[in-house]
Length: 254
Ligand SMILES: [Zn+2]
Ligand SMILES: [Zn+2]
Image (cartoon, rainbow, N blue to C red; front, side, top):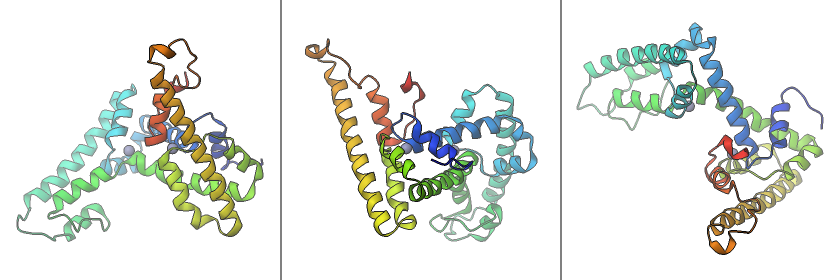
């Protein structure tokens, strides 16, 4: 398997013993992004302008709060809130209760056309826009898209990578869905057929395996099975949650 600088993260993720190599990639990207945010980046003007405008989602606020750089987080919160207060107070001052389709002012605030048609006023559209965006989510999702491209590139070019994928434990449902959705854009003919055949069989095998693991976990609470081995079920709860929902709990490897 020839490793290139851009294929290394993808190949490495498939070497980890995990319920979903794509969750591994997302976790690493988010972790790096959080460290970057709380490093010197929040002092950089262009980044700060972006975070002032869009802020973060609740999940990433929570992750940043867990880290110890309270001043870095507080500085970003302060100037983001300043911007929100400034924008929102302007919109609320001119709120037209009877208006259903006033979009023009909003576009100038957001700098682009937005999904605002269903909003009866700018302020509610502005708030929705804020909640649909997060500096870290936006940053990681564009890199993640490149990883998906790399996955298909490797699948087409490298037989050893196909073998590595087949030796993995499949994917969480969310990332399996993404593969099924993107595959027609990336593969065709017999390559596509072969991909679907391999990936579906892999996924079904591992969905079945995890169903057996979680079932065995529940049976272990029955006194009749108390003395029997846990088999692979000891950490079946976090692994099943990840398979179903992409929830990534690091301590599951302990
Ligand atoms: Zn996943
Ligand atoms: Zn986020």
